[in-house]
Image (cartoon, rainbow, N blue to C red; front, side):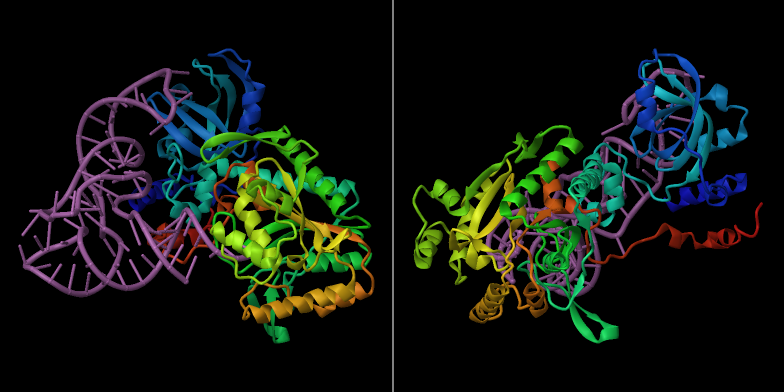
Length: 516
RNA sequence: GGGCCCGUAGCUCAGCCUGGUAGAGCGGCGGGCUUUUAACCCGUAGGUCCCGGGUUCAAAUCCCGGCGGGCCCGCCA
């Protein structure tokens, strides 16, 4: 590998075509898909006088002797280049480049638009510059990289070659943009809350612990922006949101990753119904704008199904949803009775909270059956320490979760704004931890947050939307790691081409001062 | 935290059960070819069989340990 690449780079240096010497920028006038769209009506075998300049990476080279076909990819897609001997011969620069060109190289090309005899819009090469070279072979075969280890270690190669992954990552950006647009139109402002926090909160999860040297104190990485966003509502930012990175020190699986992003929005003078409406609008309208329709075909278990995002979405209470599957009443049943029902279904729950048993039953029985967006409402109060008790019955919280295609996508509630209750609920959580021997994931006492409530939090609704999970659903991705551009892997011993070719160092160090 | 599976050429994998000097296709390299679409035809090079130890006359193959990765269960979104 390094032998031939070394011969190539030395030849480029000799010819004065070394891209690290000569290629600092390239003026691009056109993009692949734009060209193909504009000239689609050209008759096969015809040539235009329209000159373009494009740049991108070479994926395939089909050498036929007197004519060479090159597949060039830019950020929009593929376009074919045609290099013909009658144009190339006699031009020593072109001859050299065409001879040295490899798959993976990044080139700039100038030429006129033609359509080949087989009817493909192409650029007839009049000039080529090598702008950068691929020192390593890139696996440009049909389906790109398959080995999961290489996919995650060299994710730039996976994203380069796997169009599904590339589209998904771009669509995450577009969904975020649409959600920002909708929130902006409604008067929400976007903020950033601290990722380094003295007390973690806003969710129930194990935090990452780190240290600020200058303050000589331990801090936690944010598990959720919730309590800080509500402090901002106290401060008078009545409509506020954040697309927040959250860190949770838990295990990795196909739907969990220790750092993930959530859109959390809070609106003063609104309740959970308003937040469900907002959630519907944010997701349904983003899906429509980004994917073109409220109905979206996705893959599930090898089969294609259609998810319908048309509003309004189904709303069902948590207990009713369980009863619907079990075909028996569970409302009013005691903790022990519920534990027995759960046990008979193979769900063993040690937690002392009645609500936790209900939640487990719900996750086992109901969640896997969801397809279309469904709001599950009326969560047990005892597992919702930051939510406001249900106005009709304090055993429930005004809390909802959104499920799509078997995945929990969002969680929201009417926010608890009563400091007396909030203090009590935090104390309750501390008791819970003692009972569970420090094992349970509970919400820690946060006195500064309660102090903020003591200054007066308006009645407020809030919601958090898990964007990675939403995009998993929208793009039929089997693992959350597929939507995350880079995930962590254990260190490896990397063999570098540049380490082997350090004898070229002297030439490159002189480049700036020794223009040849 | 528990269980299962995988690691051989740049890539996809065979060989392992039943130990005997490392295989195929694709890709690479060289040659040919002026309308191809993962071009085609001819030729050719290419390996720390993940690492370490053990058994054996002999280990890719059997045994033990480790490393890396994946999946399922428990827990968190």
